[in-house]
Structures are given as structure tokens and as C-alpha cells.
Length: 462
Image (cartoon, rainbow, N blue to C red; front, side, top):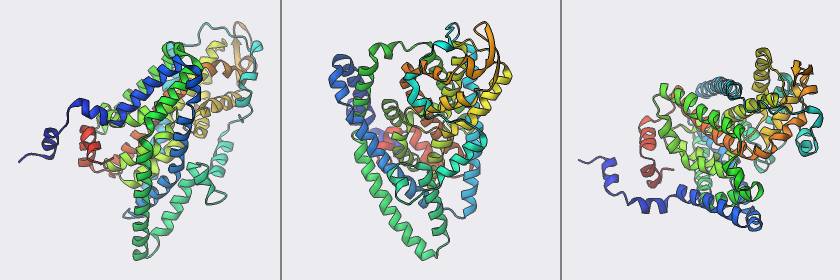
């Protein structure tokens, strides 16, 4: 008797047919077409910007309801509330360990490859006008102030605004509290609420499926605008700093995450292929949040429990931005090298500690990492530096002003794409590892999904 896999392989259509029916293929076509338009007609390319703006807005509208419903259904389906605490503790521990490894990798790579060495920039000649809007948003970073800010941001002022304003952390809090209350209700009432929420979830995911059909248009629009603004040469030769960032992100994904997956008996290359469509969407839009909703759906359908996916992924988008950490570490060391600032091991340890706190305030959207970079530089301003550019030392603020981040403006857009893609990969692996660690995974479903991604998709399982 033939197995299910053998039967599906016999019915598998030709490669050309599969490509035409593949949404990922059309996203790639959209990216290529956008690059061509951006090069050929700058005015028309810039006029296409609403295509990506509307797509991201539509997805962000769905993020709140999907997180809310998924978390509640996940929690009330648990055998006991102890499981909720178990998942949460494991997730927090994983986030902190891997985030710290990402920061250490960024500092190490910047020191080894030295992207800013020899630039010899002068702090007195820095023009702050280009970064005023970022500097105005920076605040001093400290452990107490950052923790208090996170707590304040987590408490909603009303029920509606967290959903309309896209405040993921507040939606998370409302969902957890609602789920705990439902869990304490009588069983009949709990089952009735669960059925209603399941209908709502199916409805929201159906809307998501329809919106995703427009992702090639969004990819086309995003790349057209990108090339029109920065030029085709910016795509071909972005400089040594971008190369360092790219190598670091790849080392993180296939080195650190790959090693973690290896010990969990998962092939990182197969897993990355499994989430490749979401990676393409994030690359095109420069926002890791643009793929949050479809990624949650995909991981849940591949065998990870609703509770794990619902808790780990949304929380990770605030507390586990691994490649944003790499970006912050590389950028700070790069700026120090560019301004001739000699950082000792003690200085770099201080940078790592401050970034462990500051990076928790970044979110997966374009520009936020740049703001956090300015905040971190301001917080480190009082650090004593022995010497800079062969002259007298002083505080870091004197030899490396916050306005110095302005030299990164030209490449920040492209670094944003790298960190957005890396953050997506990092949070996907986080959800997987926590699910395996807490035994919240259906191995048969998961192995089939990553070994047969096309069949998994064609069978309507994502």
C-alpha cells in the first residue's frame, strides 16, 4: 500500500505549474519588477508607494485580533495553568540567552572585520540636522527606567486602542488576563466561548489569506520605491559595513540558531526553507511585523501548540530582536572606530550590558533600531575614553556625539531589511525551541511540514 507522501508525489504537477501557482514565486517576480521600475522611471516608482503602505496597514489591523484569539484559545486548551507558566519561563530564559549571544556576536564581528577603521571622522564637524528627528526621540537608557517604561506600555488605557494602534504588548496582556478568567469559568461556559473564538479565528485567518494574495504587489511597490530613492548602485555596492552586517546575520542564523536547532534535532536549512515565503515578504517590506500573522498561522498548522505560538512569537517581537541586537552592537563599534575612539574590553562589556536593556525597547519596524541606537549612545555618553584620533580623551559624548549616527542614514534602510529578516528567523526558531522544550509539538506534523513544504501548502495546511 502506498504512503500518503508517495501518492502526493505521483500527483505532483510539473515544476512550471507549481511555480505559477506559488505565491513565493510571484513575490520574487514582484521584487525584480520593482527594481527594474525603480531604475527605469523614478517618478512612477515613487508613486507606487501606497501599494506597500496599504498592505502593511492591512496586516497590522489583523495582528491584534489574531494574537488575542490565538493566545486565548491556546491557554484555555492547556491541561493546567502551570503549563502557561512553564512556557513563559522557558521563553524568557531563551530570549535572554540568545539575545546576549547575538550582541556578543555583533561586537566580535565588528572588532574582527573593523568596518570603521581608518575613517578618522571629526566629532566637531558633525551636522546634527539630518538626525534631529531621531535625537529628539532618544532618552537616557537605564535598567530601572527601561523596565518601568515597559510596564507602563504594557498596561492599556482602554480595550479598543491596543487593537487599533497596533500595541502588541498590550493586546498580549489583555489576552492573557481574558484567558485566565475564562479558564476559571464553568466548563460548559468555557466550551461555549471556545467555539465562538474558533469561528472568529477561522474568519480572521480567511481575511489574512486573501490579503496575502496581494503580497507580490507590496513587494513590487517596496522595491521600486527603494531603488528610486537610493539608486541601483546602492543595491550593488552598499559598502563594507553592510557586508559585515550581512555576514554577522548569516552567522547568527546558520551558526548560532543552526547549532541550537541541531541539538533539538531539527535541520536549520529545511526550517528556513519552510518559512521562506515569510522571509521574502519581510525582506521586501523591511518590517518583521508584516509576516507575524501568517507566520503564526503556519507554525500552528505545522504542529506547534497554539499556546506556544501565541505567547512566544508576539512576545519575541518586543523582547527577542536578535538581529537588531547585532545591528546595534556593530553600529556602535563601527562609530567608535570611525571617530578613532579606543574602546577597552571594559568599555565593550559596558556596551553589551546597556544594549541588553536598550534593545528591549526596539520593535520590528523600520527606523526603531536607529532611534534605540541614539538612545544607547546617549546613555553611554558619560563613559570615560582615554584617547580619540590621537588627541586628548574625555567622555564618549565629547569624542563621539549622538549626532554621529547620521553617517549611518545612507545605509540604514538596507540594514533594516537584514535585521527584520533576522528577527523573523530568530523568533520562528524561538517558538520552535520552546515548543520542543515544553513538549508542545506534534512531531509527525512538523516533520512532514518541513520535509514536504510544497505538499504541506497545497494540502491547505497553511
